[in-house]
Structure formats: structure tokens, C-alpha cells
Image (cartoon, rainbow, N blue to C red; front, side, top):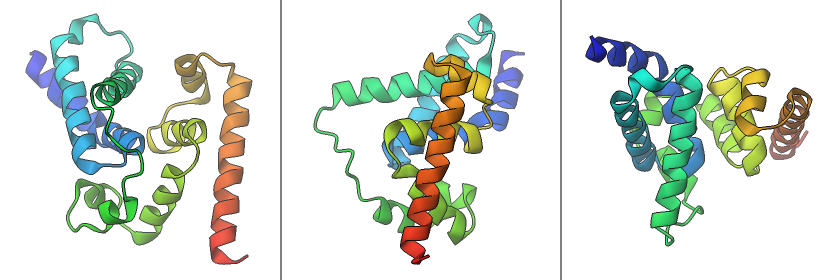
Length: 163
């Protein structure tokens, strides 16, 4: 019974969780590991979780932070262009068109707070209310941060397109 439950949950959330993990680490191999480890933890404590999606993303972020603590030599300056240009990565299967890859690359390069709120809202389907709960901020503050993230993204798009 629990295996069937986990399979359904994996099918439902693995793409969103992978995108979130990738946005944190900018490395598709590490994002795969984080996604896998997150679902492993979910398998071990499935009965204890009331709001599964929120919990999954929280566990994923905590695993990433633990990874950073263990591996101080890890550089957040990975070459994103090399990662995105590799053929047949999981990211290629999820984000199919070049325009979406380009946009996602711009989103990944936003500052941390804007990037996280943008990814959670647009790529992972969290509501502003859910985001505000997860970040311990008001819903108005979450809305303001999302507005500013969109504004920064628009500025980057217009700057690179020469508009």
C-alpha cells in the first residue's frame, strides 16, 4: 500500500521538486541526488506528514543546506551554460524549448530570495499563502517579493534584448 502511495506522490511531484532542487544548486546531478534523497526521507516518514508538497520542498532545501555545510568547497559559481548545454540532461526533458531554458536561466540568476519565491510560485505551483507560511512572512510581503522578482526578470529580459 505504501509503495503505491509513494509512486503516485513521486509521479505527481518529482518534476517540480527537481526544478526546485536545480534552482538551489545549479547542478543537475546534485539536483537528482537531492530529489532522490527527499523522496527517500518521504518514504521513511510518509505517515507523519499532513501537507506533503510543502514538506517535500522544505526537506529538499534542508538537504541542500546540509550538503553545503558538509562540503564547504562547493562553489555556487558553477558554469550554468555548460550544465544547460549538455545533451540529454533531465532538465532537457522537463524544459523543452530553448526560450523556456533561457527564461529559466535568467530566473536562476536572480538573487536568492527572488529566485526562490519565483520558482515556488511559477514552476512549483505554490500559492502566495503557502509561500508566506513556508518563509514566515506575511502574504503581502510575499506578493511584493514576487512583484519585484517579476520586475527584475523583466529588466533582465529587456536589457539583454536591447529594448
